[in-house]
Image (cartoon, rainbow over all chains, first blue to last red; front, side):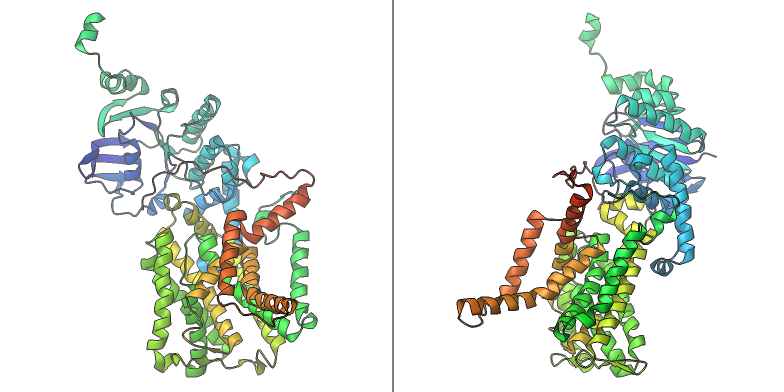
Length: 261
Length: 366
């Protein structure tokens, strides 16, 4: 049984079909990448898995059970964490506080005990801080722990957002363009982290990414989409050389061009 | 500048960052305890009023500064707290020690219930929606005349705690101590909120609802809880206001009070407990300051006291405009800047508190 099953999913916005009969499975412990030109429906698929949109047709199953009867905020509890394409951090809070919000899924205290700050709440806080400290060490964020997000550079924010998703301790991590806007060195860091997330933490990764070098170096399988339809699925090498994918990205030569060639 | 070396997780959890800081706040509490011996009866009354406003401001601050939800409906919850407290004492014969927390609870539950449909609105629409609560409550008090005595109003009985009679005119120092105790408890609860998961989920909703949701925060429910805690504390302030004013009717808690509350926390500095106190001091003492200023000015010109209608509102408005233009972080923000200047002297830079523009946001799914 696959960890995540996308079963014949279709989503329409009015007359526009954003995602059309897409089916794929993400196996436990793999890195699965979604690629495709702008408007292919990659982020829409993420929003479908996050339950922000309801599919018109089809089913989405996590761990063998449909998630279509769940609310968006229940996804974190199920073990699905995500990042956003255009960083959605809590700007007026520190890095540590942002990561602590990621621990919300593990909150066991109630409102009244928190207002009184009982010893149980303190013990729970210590535990949360220990957990985020591991994430801070993993992503080398020590220097920024108590800095406010509003003053941080773009590259660090990207990493913090990944850290916040890791603080959830998910089973499935959805990364929406983890390397967009990053320098070459920072992109390499992301590649190492994705490897480690898979191998050390045993977290399954589903990511959307345009950087084909990153995709080729970390993913086990790739699905190419265009105009909401599936083009090709397979290893990074297979997908990159698939004629339909080349057509979607570069286009086909016209008849007279072929003659010239 | 002080660098705190953190050797345990408790360093981040504790109420105070370092012993010196605790020392300063203990000194402040000592000063507050000594006030009745230092001030005249009139000035002590003003200090009491500031504390009551500070409680109300902290209530609104939890909603606006912490959770990022605007409200112009908080005068209604002052009224609910005030009427509930006095009616529980008069009609049911409950002692103050029971009626007071119950009044807060009633205002809190009312706030949470009203929030459920209300928090579907955002920003300016929420503000307009909450104005309706204030106006409706004013009318409801008149409609429910058999209970509330309508436009004639109600008298708050003297507070009785274990046989000690607490009255603004006969025992002003006892009223002051009582309200100081409530203030300190509310501050403690607010601090506890800030350092616990619930407070962090409030801040998460303020900064990005969509990612708060992705972190597993139930946005609708958390907003209702924020409203409940906020209006509950405001209700406590309302109950104290009733005892402080002695008599109140439908017009005591009008829209102007709602606006003044919001004004106070903006002038004081959004998002901090300090801001609630600074703002409360400005709003509670400004009318007196204007009156005194008018007397002095009148004597100076030699025409006796001059009365200009609308003067108070105009000065409030002017203050708000000046703060939004020149110090959006409020009095507390200015205080932080001055403190940083001295801590880093001579290395303070003019742009230190200027933040980079926020990056493009994902289209918010609202």
